[in-house]
Length: 128
Image 1 (cartoon, helix red, strand yellow):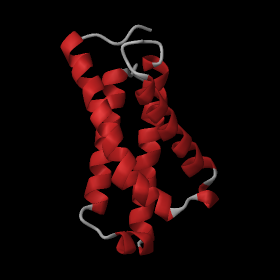
Image 2: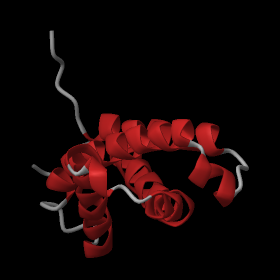
Image 3: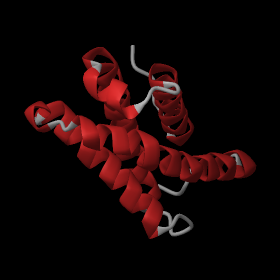
């Protein structure tokens, strides 16, 4: 049985995946992360989840001019990374994954929090 998912769900998916990344990485030093394949695999899975939710959210938000180009570009980048992580796994660079976790994910979360607040305030989905 499938249920229809929407922007609230996709925002929550991104929040959950980011929370999982924080739990997996914690205060781990970069050198430890780069040598810990198990944590890398867990983080890659969460980044892939973020990318999939970002694809769905971006497709919807790109039709709503209330959301800026920077957000849409970040969502596209997240999906682009998901594509590499899932289909070009042999190209995964742990250094890039680390930078993504430390820089890109926190930046994206700030924007998703804004989207989530907007959705709650308006109690509606962006126009489809």
